[in-house]
Length: 299
Image (cartoon, rainbow, N blue to C red):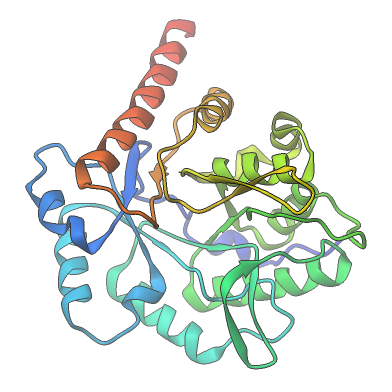
């Protein structure tokens, strides 16, 4: 299925305007004081949109102070881009108000769904990669970009199964979305590793099929390990531990091809002390610096 490209997509400001090609962290309120006191803070912070959709209070007071000091990336988790129902107009209006208020350097959402038949599920659920899903996702992204007046980033999901009825691979599905909507990609390297392990794909081959030219931000996170009913090792994208060695290696592989990218450390469960999160960002920054140095030597 070849969808026509949205003629308005080229008019959107680029998603990475103002987002530095360096390492940042996902902001947690308990780290606020330590972050402000850091003489060499991360290059940017990312916040979840849904945590700031109220009118005021401490969350907005903190975010306003951070926005004065650092670039901010807003990451949505509740739009249900892949859902069968139309996007929730009230949620979209709250998102627009947030984006207008803070003018973040980037906005991103997930290739997933979380609503159905008027009910909200507190999870990012997978969808079948077929022509109907492609048309629906593209229409939703067009609606978001037109409403916000900016290019958005779409994040690849972490998955634990694949639908037999899919007619696209995930990289081909993402490529088709980029071609039609003009959106950019948020490449979650941990999600690539988790999904490829669980679904028995080669992560390097996955990345080779992905339009890396469309990537504008990278996420890194830790994952947990469990066993499924058959005793097979199952990886869970829980964002509750340091980035694993295999994910660091895959990240190095990515940025060797793309060059430096804004890179975010996510840590959303079992949240550590600020110093631990900062150390993970410093490790990502060291790899970004290494890529820059190699490029200069080759020039």
